[in-house]
Length: 149
Image 1 (spheres, rainbow, N blue to C red):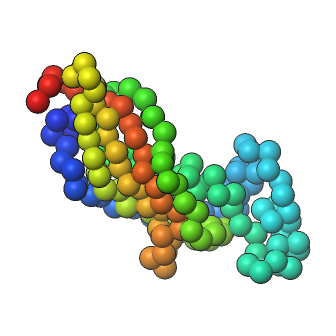
Image 2 (cartoon, rainbow, N blue to C red):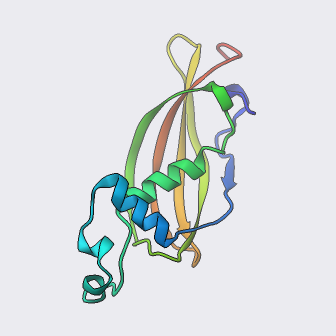
């Protein structure tokens, strides 16, 4: 487990892969309530420019954030997710794609009281072909066990 004060801007990490399944697409439709035919109807999707069903864009965001929680490993030091900025959907996700995340620490700053810090990480969701399919910057508030530096 890492402490906020020990995290260096510029640190980077790559996750292991995860293959998106038919069950994942079904769960994405179920949990979001989005049963648009581009996601749920294989025959309809064959008539679209992509020729197959695609995942909802928000599903990529969902799994990218989940996969990125392992870097840096902060354990119970995490107080709250503060949001994300400039998240972009760059390419579709399909059943059968294997994806991983690449995480770079791009900034960090202590809060005014010195007891907490804000960590900013660029998260890239990358498919098996090496194409970045989604990316953005996430902000997380964490405890500063070492006080002000």
